[in-house]
Amino acid sequence: MHRYRIAWMPGDGVGNELLPLGIKILNTLKFKADYIHCDIGWEKWKNEGNPLPDKTISELKKADCGFLGAITSKPKEEALKALKPEFKDKNLEYRSPILQLRQKFNLHTNFRPCTSFVGNKNNHKEDIDLAIFRENSEGMYSGVEFYPIPSSVFDAIENQNKNMRKFRIEKSDDIALSARIITKTACKSIIQKAFEFALLNNRSSVTLVDKPNVLRETGSLFRQVALDISKNFPTIKFQEVNIDAMCMWLIKNPNDFQVIVAENLFGDILSDLSAQLVGGLGFAGSANLGDNFAIFEPCHGSAPKYYGMNKVNPIATFLSIKLMLDWLGEKFLSDVLFNSIQMVVKEEKIGTYDMGLKNSNIELTDEICKKIKIRLN
Image (cartoon, rainbow, N blue to C red; front, side, top):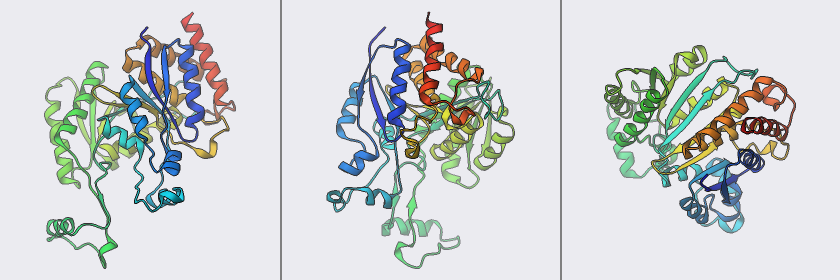
């Protein structure tokens, strides 16, 4: 087996206790890799004014892929207050390091499988098998924002809305602007990948989720690209659902959907909603995929209030490791890991609090490792 080089980024909070459990799983699988520790996250921001150090970027460029535990992100005002005094007058601005990584490495596709496990008491239904493709580099998370708004931008807004009700503005700092940027190139990429996945995995439908009746220009562009690409996949049903209706339909009839594709913000919302259908964020792994590089991460946050308690479900981390193994071409090990997780959940004997059980994440990891050893021997 090739020996891999993995940029290993524990990040903040529970990422620091879950990633060592991830290495325990990988070692049990006899996966050969060097795990290069890379700093990232809130503590680096507070102490150095940069949540994504240059050294981390350099190590990522030398790695086969990256793996991220969790990061803490807070609103603008709280981020500035958290800085050490010597950095507070340097006009620094906190930007989420994972958003930076997605853009720096062109990780245009966020892939979130949501699968229910037999034995998980918190499943909405026991046969849910959703795949969500979220455009990962633009949309409402493009980072193009203004406050206060430059006069040239404000004039353009006023001109665009001259036949509509005026914004309720009394003074210049009454308005902030965040831009939703949708490009045809990014639309083609994410929609093509959604259809290709459906074709390769015997999924019969792809559903585009947006709001083109209100977000008329960006939504129409996304929709038209999807309609054009769908013609190349005649055996796959293409359907469109507005984001608000989709939130209702996923709860009511989740089995009506197989592959979902959406822009960044709507995809983020739908991913977490879908995760709850299959037991919560403790069962939500994800992959940030580019053309030649990828970073994998569980979808939950850093949960600082739980750090050190060994209670946060590690399965999301392990499912992200499964996705990493798939991407690296280690399909056998990926299947062994997934089947071992399935077996432990199905037995309903060992599990964390969110699974209705009382074990630590260490005990749950050890049980999954036992199942891995059985399958390997």
